[in-house]
Picture 1 (cartoon, helix red, strand yellow):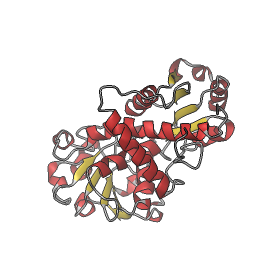
Picture 2 (cartoon, rainbow, N blue to C red):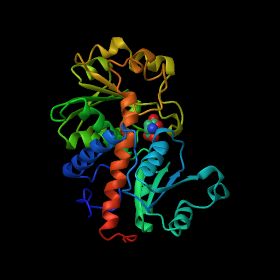
Picture 3 (cartoon, helix red, strand yellow):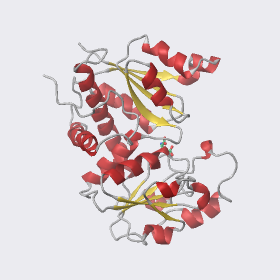
Picture 4 (tube, rainbow, N blue to C red):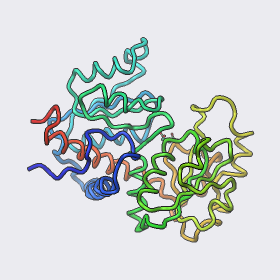
Length: 319
Ligand code: ASP
């Protein structure tokens, strides 16, 4: 028996084009995987016989390992392509590399790439499902979904929720995906950053803009901190990391501007003492950071399951 479809397309490229029903469907399915992941036997056979390839052109700890675990727990054969030792280092293009892998008939390709639009390009060229695991500063859909799952599991409703996204918004795919998701679900989003770390068109995002933490955090339910994405910066965007921490680093003093009971999130990797103080990051009363990592596996299982349902009902590798 095939389970009901959740996604209307055979790829997950971003949050921008997902409907509220699709987002809610993925979160609901992920809830069941969050329960399974705490059980002794964490395996199912939803992806039995399927092949998943992880192709990461940028470094990753959480995303790559959680896609690997997610695929394995669902019973798929999982291959992690090591880009450093592949022919990419000999000058092979993204399309040629992906076409080669495609010929091995994977069912799902998970890709992270430094260029915005890379995942979409592959989705147009290849005939397997493509999941965007982060493309440049464009989107990181599974991060926004896991953040939403973490918030929802803490009993917070999205409607009217005030979320302050703070730091390097300009270079952050996490910020973009979260903005799309949170606004669709009825939350109020504030962007809190110096002018140099906001995108030029930030005023068109539908968010409130703040340049200081005091006004940006006032009354916020969720404070989401972002890393300074130095790898995407040409030149200096802040005078010094010490000064940046002074004005924008989240410590308990600045957190006190937010609503009592406000929760702190960070997609990782953290730069302690730059955008976040260890005392906040490690404070289990307020920090959701470890829970975000846990929900990352559940969300990725839900995404893979949802894509496999599409395959079962007529994709290239349909039985
Ligand atoms: N891990 C997230 C990403 O890949 C956030 C970060 O790198 O700062 O975008």
